[in-house]
Image (cartoon, rainbow, N blue to C red; front, side, top):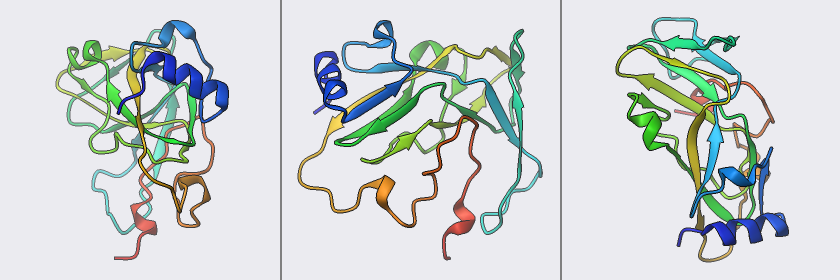
Length: 178
C-alpha cells in the first residue's frame, strides 16, 4: 500500500517520516516532491573499477545553472534530508524531468526502512539540458511494511551510506567482499 497525503502527514506527526525542509505545497496526493541540491559530482577517472574507491570531484551548481552533457554520469543530491522509520521510501523522477530527457537514478530508487539522509542521484541525460539548484527533481513515495523489522538500515554495522551529507556520495561498492 502506498501512503496518501493524509497518511504521510500523520506519519510525520508521529516522527516515522521526516522531511527537512518540509513545504506543505510539495505534498502531492500520494508523494512528496524533492528538489535538486546545490552540489553535483563527477568521477575523476574515465574508467571506474568496482573493486576500488573511485574518487569524485564535487562542485556547486552556479546560479545561472549547469548544462548536463550526454555520456556523463553526474551524481546529484536532494536538497531535502529524509528519514523513514516505518515505511519503504521510493524515489522516482518527476514526469516533467523525464520529459527533459533527465534520468535521476539508474538503479537506486528504493530506500530501506531506517534510511536517514539526503538521496544521492545518479543523473544522466539524453541531450544537453540546463539544470538548477532547487528545481523539482523527484518524488518520494512511501510504502507500508508488512511484518516486523529485525535490522533497520541506520542500525546496520555494514550500512555504507549512513553518514549525513549535503553532497553526493560516490559508490561504496569497493567496501563489499567479492
